[in-house]
Length: 136
Image 1 (cartoon, rainbow, N blue to C red):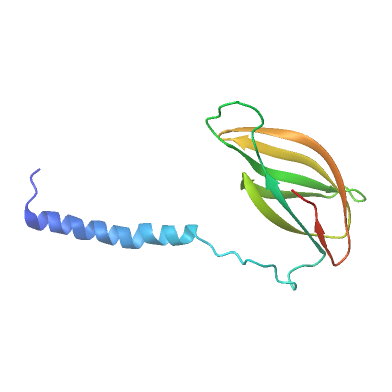
Image 2: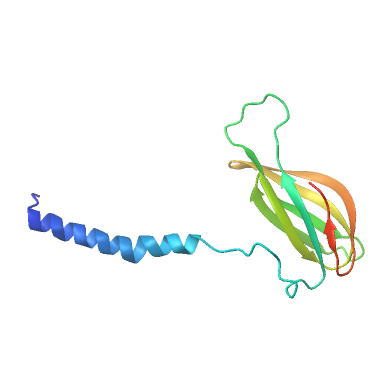
């Protein structure tokens, strides 16, 4: 099929309309604004803050860099579990938890499409109405 100038212009207008109606709203939907601080009215229990960092130890070349997908906390007295999604090799986190004694039980690490779970045993206490820093 041969295109003349008017057909090419019409095709260009249709592509522009497609771009404006479909592509641009999809880009806006991918970007969200997250507040940089926690509103104290949103915190019902106590705030637990920390940082998660993954690092390679040794000279092992990797196609994919490791990152933490999530970690899991268990409240010692009730057995209630909390999963905190990270999805990053280096990220600060803040979790609103009820006061009590907690144990970090599992951490899932991924390298591209591959994932593994590590069993961890770290115990910490969360005081009522305060901020608990659990470290890096």
